Amino acid sequence: MTVVQFDSHPRKSPDNWVAPQLAVIVPSYNERDNVALLYDKVTAALGATPFEFIVVDDNSPDGTSEVVRDMARRHQNVRGIHRLGRRGLSSAVVEGILASAAPYFAVIDADLQHDETVLPQMLEKAIAGDHIVVGTRYSGEGSVGEGLSKAREAGSRFATKLSSLVTGKALSDPMSGFFLMRRSVFDEIAPSLSDDGFKILLDIIVSAGRSRARQGKELRIGEVPYTFRPRHAGESKMSSIVVVQFLGLIVSKLSGGLLPTTFLLFALVGGLGVVVHMGTLWFTHEVLNFNFVWSQVAATLLAMTFNFMLNNELTYANKKLRGWRYLTGMLTFYAVCSIGALANVSVASWIYAYDGQFYVAGLLGVLMSVVFNYSVTKVFTWR
Ligand code: GDD
Ligand code: MN
Image (cartoon, rainbow, N blue to C red; front, side):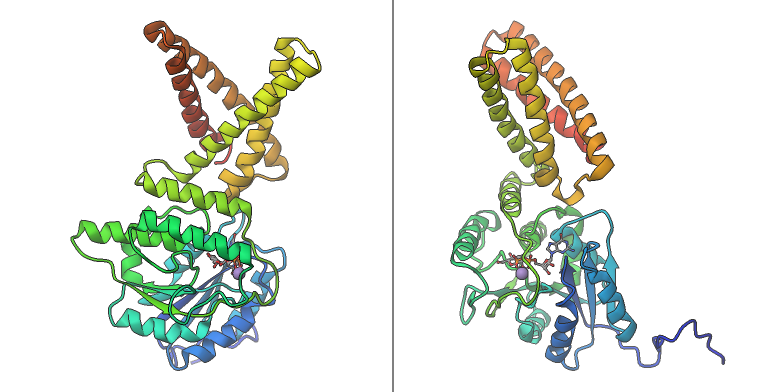
């Protein structure tokens, strides 16, 4: 039989194909100088275990995707998912898992901070019955080593305490980005995961715990200690934005998912907008002696602009508008907020006429406009 060779790359042979037992999912953003080294280390660590290596890259400016394609030409168990127009660690991880075909998967950072040599031990525990196995820096032999600054270690420990509020479990490192689990457990809960932020493991633990509890079953979580290493090449993408998003996720989970994280962040930004508004009003009216109407116009414009910019960075960081779409987005945002303000005033006046208490009417008017602005800008501005 003649086989058409389209180019010089070696083709995958069905004869030596072994189905993967483990999928190693690697989210990446600007990790050009780390991914190939990670692959070699994982290969050495896993020995004879058949695995696939899936890198999910968000169109990194440093060309990580090109490096991954080059690896995929040389190794038949490497694949890249190259996403355009989106950013986000959690959603990248979810997409990688969904694209994998193995009964178990592990999630590991690209920058070599996680110790790949404990992967076989993690897999063993999962095969023995744990639903989720977490690589932990905070128990047994585990430690943050040189991997975290003092300030970040303190932040990480505080976040760990906060998250026990929502998991209801005393886990030593729910903030870990390093874990391994059974595919079937993930499939049950995939639709209920929120796709923003960094804290995919926390989200998985909460959702899987609820789902198993509904079936009257327990969620078994195992831990394997490891020492966190300093990042190999490149820079961390952790930022204050990520921290605020995490706090939003905690509150959202405490509400049982009733209040989406994006809504909470949108409302927070709205609250800050009120401060900007009042500050501007005071400055233009009291200090610059503008008349009230012009001061109010200036304050409104400035507050709306501030809200648009902050929502774009924080609330919708995973679908940030840029360039031309930034301008059109800003215009739709102004338009929606103006209608929201009208709705606010009409609802508040109506309630005031009925109830006569100014603060009840005022608060309900504000609530009304936040819900309105959120729902409508979600569709028209950050669609
Ligand atoms: N696809 C994609 N998109 N990948 C991303 C993105 C993104 O927007 N942001 C970050 N990543 C990838 C990075 O390339 C890296 O492989 C991994 O996610 C972790 O990102 P880092 O920037 O290295 O984060 P970190 O080291 O500061 O935080 C890590 O440690 C924390 C514990 O201290 C992460 O593992 C966190 O999940 C963990 O909580
Ligand atoms: Mn890192």
